[in-house]
Image (cartoon, rainbow, N blue to C red; front, side, top):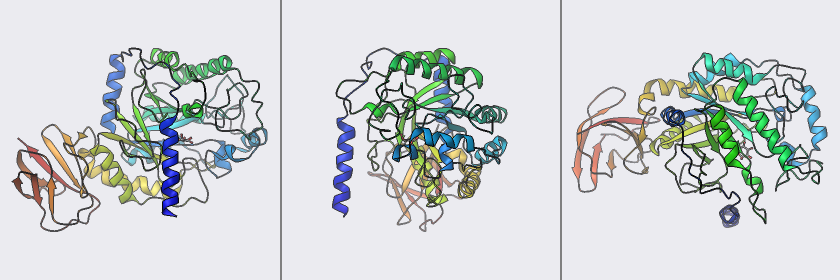
Length: 439
Ligand code: GLC
């Protein structure tokens, strides 16, 4: 069984690796504006964001890909008239997310099912014109984010399983959409008109987070998404807005963040990542349970220590963690997610200083944990030690070593392998942080 799984994984990885390069525009010289450069720095300093996958798919309770697995798009669309998230309260979301220590939200403005979670003039298939709820949830959330100083990023799907003008790719073949109508120019205009609305009507947006490029990664002839002009339009509309694309490739010119899906930079356990790491700010997105959109049977949430250690490990690599929540159809965040936000917040209030505004540590993650760095401080995060002596494999010049939590001194010694911390006992806390002052 294990061998079969490995073979399947290897095959998937191969497919991803062999995907034809479909974007011809690798070569142009993208000069980020000073405002974008500032956004990149602010973004990197944040280290922790919350991803929100919310759409009418939450009604079916089977995740955001439900439409791809059988329903006819016209039947599916009827869910919009039944979408009335009576308990939605943007202030409650923002308070809970802020309390977790997260510093930004990335929310799905329009996912692959084509339903817009904002008021758009480009199609009636949207939260205001298409549902009895008639409230622009994105506007409410954006206002609340701006009021409470949480940065806002918008997920936007390049692909669409419902619109006939979208040139069909490798997914969404059973939705009953007429794939002969295919009209790229019209679809491109539609997307750009929507992006213009998003970047005009909702205040400062710190990033647009694209997804779906990979829908054409198996085309025989190159599929040109015309990213260059679209990216330029975004940078023109809001000069501080960054562009990110979850294409599972190394970044293209015009992009400001490198995304990794379900894996930390350089790792590839899920078969989507393993791309070369670029000098751009890095972000790993991952789920709290197993699904992005609300899935009623998926109660398999990772526990808080696991989530905190994942965030710490990401920070040790110089990457942000974008941790996902799939809100329920009634508009609330699931209780299991709220618990975790609360517990992460408690931890971040004590240890945030060792995460926010830090850079990657001077050595790779070790079996016992990792490290982050800020100026002449090195924070050693002991998250899985097997013995009380911790080897930091780097020629560090240590001036002082204390436990971060209670400032008690930590003994250390130097050898040709590096510096060893002598903790006395094997720590069993979520993350035993030692602060080193370096010379
Ligand atoms: C994938 C999925 C999508 C999800 C995204 C989040 O690309 O298609 O459903 O939104 O990953 O990273």
